[in-house]
Length: 82
Ligand SMILES: [Zn+2]
Ligand SMILES: [Zn+2]
Image (cartoon, rainbow, N blue to C red; front, side, top):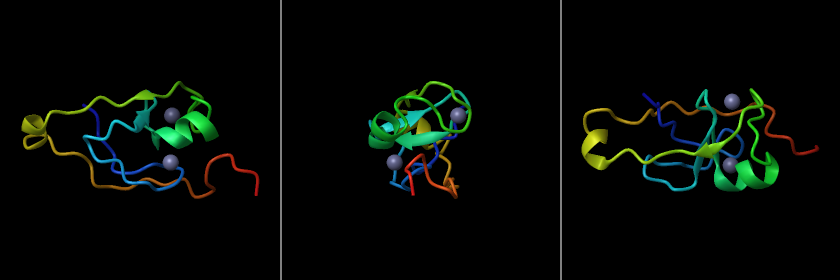
């Protein structure tokens, strides 16, 4: 079952479970659409896997299986040249 993490690992943007802008890899590294498409160019910076749109969990199911509230953030950011 997906954790449905609450934020983008790159920019810390909120990604609620009903967001159409959430992108994940097979390990569920989670990014917003802007970071996934522009900064990361569709590849996960942690594992190199592809990033796809995270499916929406229906609200009726969220009550039973709530989304994760544990924020994950990459300490070094994502690929931007400092
Ligand atoms: Zn982002
Ligand atoms: Zn990954």
